[in-house]
Amino acid sequence: MTPEAKVKKVVAEQLRNLGAYYFYPVTSGYGRSGVPDIVGCYKGRFFGIECKARDNKPTPLQQINLDDIDKQSGIALVINEKNMHSVQDILDPSDVNDRQMEFDFEYE
Image 1 (cartoon, rainbow, N blue to C red):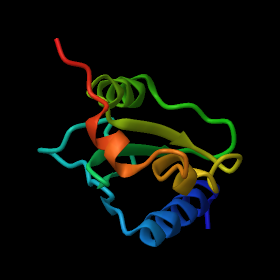
Image 2 (cartoon, rainbow, N blue to C red):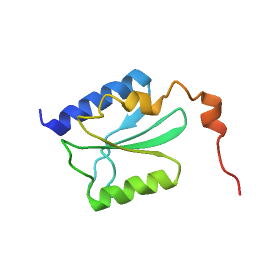
Image 3 (tube, helix red, strand yellow):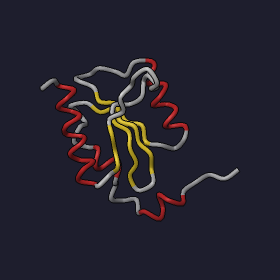
Image 4 (cartoon, rainbow, N blue to C red):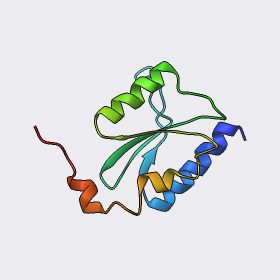
């Protein structure tokens, strides 16, 4: 198993434990390039997770997609071996209740 595949496996296990909706998008002729490795939704929050081996960084196109997710108040993560066990804590922090997460929006 490649180092990146190991990261994806650990991340997917945490997402299953949370009961999150997620999938691995397949980029083909009609797909969008640079989409994170794993996309999904948990408790009404969209997330994109780019999995990397070692200290590898997202490509410029991957970073643009992660930034776009972040700009829309989604959760954009770059996960590697160092932080692969923290996904569950990031998506479901114990100090944030569901109502707070649901209603903390800025209005213009």
